Image 1 (cartoon, each protein chain N blue to C red):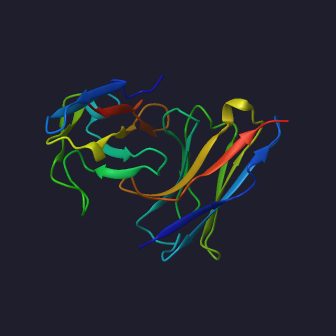
Image 2 (image 1 turned 30 degrees about the vertical axis):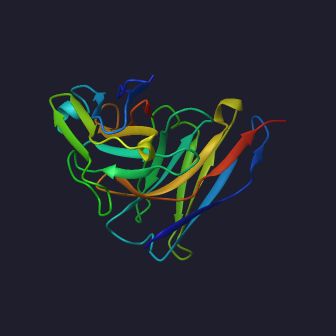
Image 3 (image 1 turned 90 degrees about the vertical axis):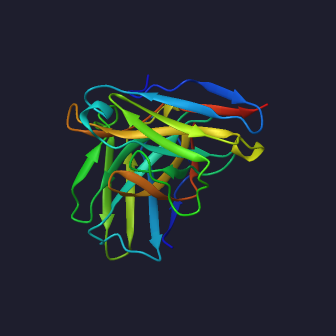
Length: 112
Length: 118
């Protein structure tokens, strides 16, 4: 059971917008730690998609956006494309115990 | 562009110790800007952070694995290593090494599958 909770799956038609939630607590997202998002295409290595809650690394299309509020964060994908079908993971830091990095449970995005 | 490459046995017997090494090229593990990390992914499941090490040798481990994990660093070879003791089938996973900056993982190795089986 992950410290960061994501919906197991979301789906949308090409061109639509989907959002993925990442719910944490007062010891991680709510404590002010940044949220980062990773995209893992089938059979590939995870790739950093959003860092520092809202920032896109060079080369990531602006169809991808991130936001954070309170103890939650969200990843939005607009203009959904077939190539966006992948698993998406949020990641943050938790200050409980001695402090540790934590990933969300992952969300499978299906393009209908 | 930094590159990371995992190496080590693909098959480990139950109760034994899993040992992997990550070799960093086009970059240096002695950089003061990065932490060097291990992350794993069981087949068909999500990502799990194992731990990280700084060039100085300071470490931080996942509390759920802390009693079994040791991460070390060899700055002369630009390598860092993972040891996971007393493995069981639950430790079967793809193991990734990764570079972390500001607690985000910006470069990853290709991953290596380690199977725990007799």
